[in-house]
Image (cartoon, rainbow, N blue to C red; front, side, top):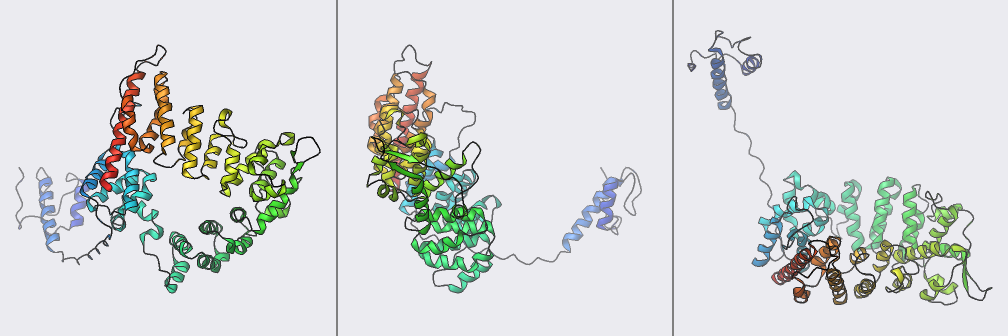
Length: 538
């Protein structure tokens, strides 16, 4: 063992920098001053470093105390009931198992129930328990779909925590104004200063907040700097006018039709076309009307279509995109845009007072029906017109349920989105009763939760039919997952009979009966858990 140097024989005159240099070079090549080369040199170097460390630390002056963190603001909302708080801890502690494959067992997937729990808690106005905030922020960090509900439930304390942990900075980016308090309606100076000097996200949040309470004030604020904004910023600001869109916005939007940015012009035209009384809607109706008319020369009234021969400057100014996508004819591309932007109410007047159902039932000459009806579908979605959506959807029992104008499940789902919740559920239930579940997944996704009783019964009946037929069970896992989250919990009693292992037909997939029983057991358990969650939050 090396002899420890005393304060009198240690190389105390050596500076810290000299000792670092010796350590880097090695004592075989260089030794501290006053130390002889040899076996004791490494120990002498360490002793000298220890003495110098003590001296350096002893000579430090006390640092200035750091500023104390401002406490998080109080959350005025009522606290969760104890049972609901325990349930939240269980939901946040659940993690999907790795390598579980396609078989999930009969245990409910708690993480999939967390969004629904958060929705119920937010609806009842509860505050998040402070001790649950870290786990809640971690869960929202990993799932972007969870963030809006999670941050609304977490409240202002989550933003306070997010400023202290870089892993949670997404909460600041996801909150209007980065979590900062926006000026109130009467704070004119603060509003103008933030609008002139704030970051882009703060300005977007400010404009959205003002638009929500005073549409005219937001539009006037935007007009003060419109000419000096960047094109991409103008596009984002213009999009905020969708909230509370009204006829008073038309002059500003007409001005935006002359914008130098094509995207800004297109957005302004889209907003104007959603105002049936706007001048642009009238111009589009006139153009579309000159291309589509009823021909009475034959025995049966027929819709005749003459696509526009060119896309002139006026059409381009009103948002018509001149260049057609690859594989599309230019004239049919222009026609579709004109019909899509024309107010749907004009067609009844142009076609002799016919209803939307009577109009879409008319034959269309020269193979133009697909293009014309597809454009009417887009118009019905844009203008949120339920009467036209019903006409274009047709009866759910029709062959392939294609409807007169819907050519894909995605288009049918968009049309269904314009209908009320009960009507939507009734249509999808009729579709399932005739066509089964294989084509219904996208349609189920637009139905309100919990599913209305007719829709819930249709889904359960279709699953039962597939089970009894020995169908390949894994192909229904997506629908089964939706049912766990969307079926009314009261359906659990009716499902009890399906939890037993059924007799498998000869042509059934091997092990299908056990899988179906396991799936229905999980479904029943999940529905009961959802009922308990609802009760705990009541």
